[in-house]
Length: 59
Image (tube, rainbow, N blue to C red; front, side, top):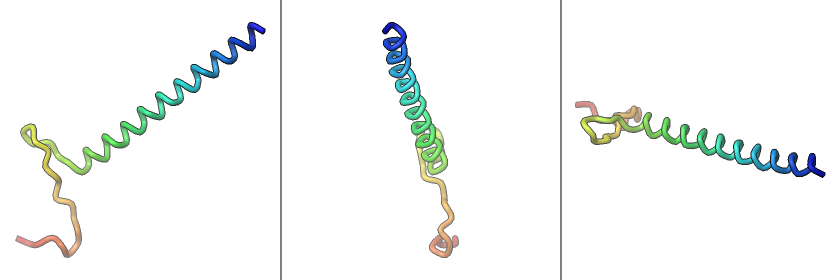
């Protein structure tokens, strides 16, 4: 019986660790996407000039 309780606790901690890891990976992915879209310049975030084919007006 003690073994069964220990196993249940282990399952709980494994699920908790897996959930924490998944949350961290999702946060890392969102952070990387936002960094690729915005560039930090003097404390302000400005969108980068992303190539949009012929829609970009040439100066």
